[in-house]
Length: 257
Image (tube, rainbow, N blue to C red; front, side, top):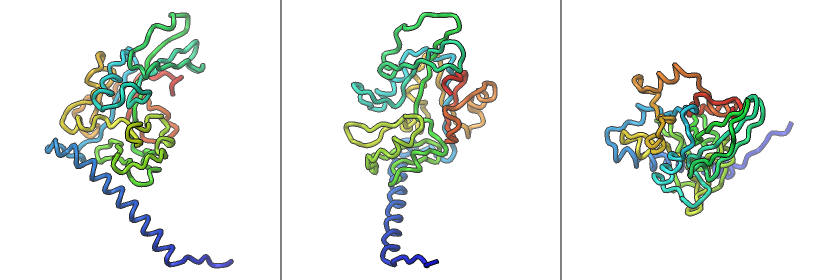
């Protein structure tokens, strides 16, 4: 068997590229984290681990969350891109049957009546957003570290470093990323990081009229999220992906999972 030979210059060149990429990732990390805590001096990233609960039984498909998100986060109103959106599921018979799913304008304008109540059929709404995974596929594929997980569990994007390569868009199993047409960089839910670091909740949670969405801090033992998770059976979307998703759904129909 012949021994593989590696040219010293190639080796050093590869090492240089590796160091360049890791340096860029670290710089992107510091660039984003420096922003919000600057405005919230008492906020400590290592003392929090953010998650969200969504109670399907409470969601009425009003679209308040979608409208609030677009306004709060400067997502183009006249576009088909959303940081959060709502889908309507119509299931005939058992939950094992393939459901009919629609989401007109991402649920931005709510939903018009489409189905009549029938024997064995049911309709329900499912809000969706970035799941802020603990083991995010999008973070793993970003070549420059523009996508990363903060110490408090929020998956974020630093547009100053994003190449617009779309690797993360393809890697996300939840379809929650898009290319902002104005900047040609990736955009997604940031869990309203500029708000939560100042002690506020997310825009979508704040405007939900039924309390279907709740932001929770898993590191805070007094946070109501612990009581909710204890007393309700919850699921995550696509559990087979083992992403460590931190958006927990109560009363999630089997046709969605």
